[in-house]
Length: 459
Image 1 (tube, helix red, strand yellow):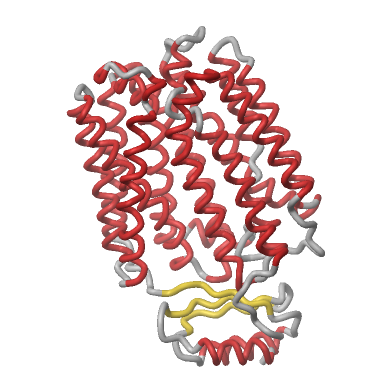
Image 2 (image 1 turned 90 degrees about the vertical axis):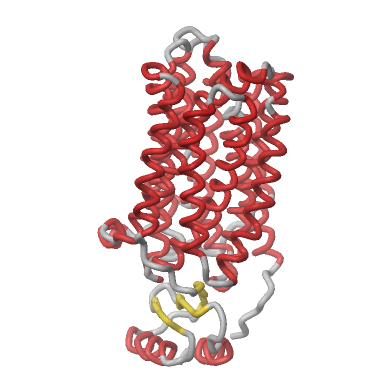
């Protein structure tokens, strides 16, 4: 067996295609974010900000409830069938929201959108179509695509609002989901065989251990808090920008575009420094502190246009750094055999944060004023800062995955023992049934040649 450093054409095609599906779906989700609150205010029932926040966050609740079951269903019914079904739900929800005449029907549409929770099924399909040694690279392509979709939506959302309005944006999201179904059919290869992948899927038997791991719980709370603060903020920011700067909502892209570009420019060197210099915890904790500062300052500057702009810049610098570093921390701190389970719980916490943030932001702005929304963001950020400051320093390791083929349990134990004896190998999990080896290795100085020889020899 020869371990190649290059993806095969099928692996590359699958990675690009599935990243595109994630991107199309996420773009559809995010496009309404900068303009929805203003649009909803004009709908019957939209004068109740609690309902507006519920409409924004409703998809997070159904997504949190269904993404793990959808992933498990894909093991039984087939990856593509589940993905088609989920995308169809998203299409239906998009057109329900587009045709809504009141805020209640928008909530129904958004809930149906979220019910199309295909993330786990798409990840499982990607695992079927890529070798273990290239799976991290493929997952990184999906992560980068989601980040780009979010950044693009901040600029495109206000522009599209001017041209087609929010109903038109919902219709566009439905069309994008239909296009994603076409990509699955015409572009994504059919896997030769689908089987379980512990690095990419949830193992129900390991959920209890993951949910009791204090280090992982800190990170799960973190992604919950980050997205709760984000969603709560967008219940009030569109109004604040319009009123303090006399800036029509269709022009808000002039704020979001430079803010997102500047935030990205700060994020890249911060992540490189944290990973290359093994300083990920200081970078991470500093970003949480910056998030807290942006929320606290926003409570005082919500009446100042340029104050809002500056705090948006601080928020998105922190947001981008944290969004990029949290999955890396999960990978470093989760046991190798439970990585897929840890990521499944993490993704569920993220979706719950979207729901709670939308509802909390709407409720607080309606009953206690706009500053209270940022006080909420500040409170959960402060708690996160305490948890982050006391977290264990993540080891300077990365995960490497290899296909080893079926072997006996005794041979797997012997291979594990010999791999652990090599320099720089800190953790090994050999799954004889899955035919895979998951290693955690030091960032530099690990015996890659020795690992390769043992893997190729199967002993």
